[in-house]
Amino acid sequence: MGNPAEFRFDEPSPRILVVDDEKMIRWSLRSCFEEAGALVDEATNLEEARRALQEVWPCLIVLDLKLPDGSGLDLLAEIRDQDCEVPVLVITAFGSLQGAVEAMRVGAFDYVSKPFDLDDLLFTAQRALEHTELRRIADLHSRGESPEWPVAEAPKTKETMGLLKRIGASGATTVLITGESGVGKGLAARFLHASGLDESRPFIPVACTAIPETLLESELFGHEKGSFTDAKESKRGLAELAAGGTLFLDEVGDLSPGIQAKLLTLLEDRTFRRIGGTRQLQLDARVVTATNRDLEKSVADGTFRADLYYRLKVVPVEIPPLRMRKEDIPALADFFLNAFRKEFAGGPEGFSSESKKVMERFSWPGNVRELRNAVERACLLSQHELIAPEDLPIEVTRSDSQGSSSTALPTLPIEGLCFEELEKNWVLEALERCHGNRTEAARLLGMNRDQIRYRIDKFKPS
Image (cartoon, rainbow, N blue to C red):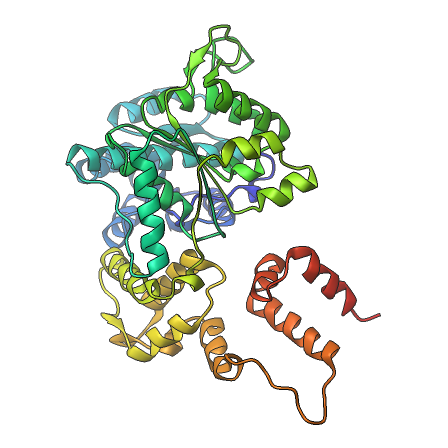
């Protein structure tokens, strides 16, 4: 995985509870998980852990078996009595396998031995979260339910949903979903899958950048026993586990050239082999891929294979950014607020009419993900019965205060103006609004990244 700081958990940010009496270990785990995008709570013993679980139920628990006021196994048993789904990773002393075996019997997802490798821990945590999500989806299917798109008020959203439904009911075997970061490409993939002829089939998500390149091939295609040093037994890959369903490859635009070549073979021949294996296996799954990258530009740059790009875009779907579906914003805000009120056991009951207008006028460069984070922050910090404009992030309200003067095109003053100075100010304002993200700033200005890079260099002090 390389540097743990390069790893990012899938959105939305998972909440992780770390239970360990050693301060240094808690600090190390908190730093590691937070850098990867998680929200972290800590407990030093069983009593604190029980109190924490009464306040907020986490997505993942990392639990030391040896605690000052008892055994972590007792807490694990209590957790399983309350919620059979939340994954628990137990921490054991090096060489103490008996406790780990007992923890697995009680219901732990996996165990790590001290001293542990942070790369391995992050990877195991991500696998635990993905495993739980798969079980949740399977449970929805068993009850005759399916994941639904939370909001569809805007015409563009309804049009996109209609397209996804048609593709889901068709025999399309390869689908490419594109769109800016945070628009909901993962949700679109699940919605497409749920719209299929048999939605009870497996949906297998793979965050391509979350898995080290050295492990990605093994994860996708599996391996035979003895094919490499740590291959102590044969393992089925995710392409096999997706049989009859959907294999979802997220962030496909970031794949290395080697994996790109293997993915092309998989899509063209619909066959693959496990690492170290000789038997050809048949791919019996729809492959849905997603990326926020401009793949045409990546092809031109030589970082993405042209033949793979044309193979992926047989059935393309673009998810429009939130600024192009403004009608969804109030409904999405209400949806997220209701979810957070349940999670936090309280909070504001809604939004003031003015705060909704402010949110509708903002461009949301981070799209649905940014809106969700803004609502979560307001739900936690607001002291009002209804969320007011001042409860929203400063960039949202500041943009709104400037909006009335920027909605119309400026007129040329009689005395003339310095166009270069005007251009410089717009570039600086776009960069400030997008927190220095050149790609998002370029999009606001109707430019590409190269054009805004040229202007940034041009306006640098000499």
